[in-house]
Image (tube, rainbow, N blue to C red):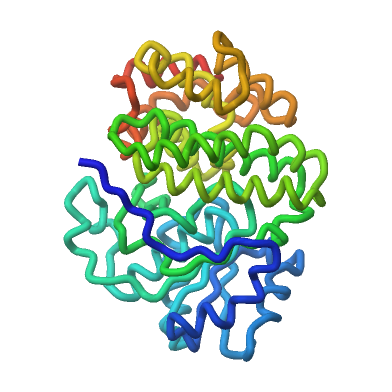
Length: 375
């Protein structure tokens, strides 16, 4: 049964960050914890955001978010939250601070350990509540500000996806101005993350026509503007369109995702490599488009139409060409993955939540072959 879940309020416009004080007041947050990373502190963007607060001294900042958020970092941030008497979480950044902040908000209200909330093991019934949660994206990719999920690399080596309507931020501020000047490669990788979200959501098995329509609109925007955003970091129109594509991608994937994300999550959990999730999605996407094609004869024409491609266009080749134009890696081997790691990754891909909604059944052997093809 599909869940039509589009429930939170998003302030979306150039300059919307000035509404942060009102957003905090509406949630009754007086002592917020800002969850971010050191990159945003170092580049001055965090200071710009704190500067709009009526009383900046009331805000505490945790900037230790790793590239792929870990259970250990969640525990550290939660301790900081409790020590400072915080009463709400404001996630500032890309997908990693968003995911970490959601985990902190969950544990602050419902208690630990985090693993007990695994939805594949009935964990959702244990969720008592979530601390007030606000999201401020500074990249256009993850769409976590509009998502009911978050992903954490656990201490036991698993990378778990947690999903519950209570994890949806109560309010979000999407200000494309915060993405102006984002480096080209980060713009490309996060933008391809958004495009992958839109494509996989459209193809996911559950029936949810509103989500599918939103995914197609997000794909239409992202496909037309990602190259502009990469080529010119100051293009305000391109930045607006890419942030909208990112938000729409997350609104759409309430319908589900697919094997691209299963494979990305399994690879992203390898701590030594510190692989970027959006880049993984971009590189793996063509392989999965080829794999799924026979099961998607009715939906691929709609993707081609949204992407402005010919009726007989090869979707996988089109994505490969876009990746090349954006300067992204041509295969997983360029990112440091080797065939020796496949045996380790396959079980994690099989058990990933996204595998359940892939349009074509994927076996362990299939995943091993798909990793080799994506190399």
